[in-house]
Length: 112
Image (tube, rainbow, N blue to C red; front, side, top):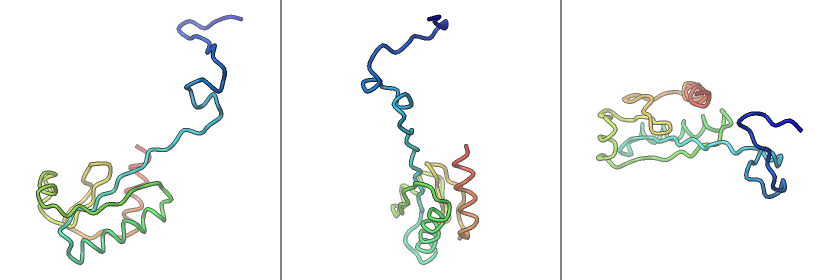
């Protein structure tokens, strides 16, 4: 059998091989982390509700958490709430976005 330069053949049994694709297992998708940044006012609670709805509509695996700590919010250079962060990046602040807009943001983040 001819070997390709730079590649070696796995000599272990398929069950012992560390490459999950060779075993026929699907690679696990990384879970998104969506954070609602806000002190707990009515608008912040509404954004959290809309973010959870958007996750269901976008059919993605994501954890939605609410960050209440003002020091942590300010560390992210957010000075107007509510704000939304996906995977650590603030995507908007100072307004209440609709579910459809959040779904689009989630889908764009998922592609990148």
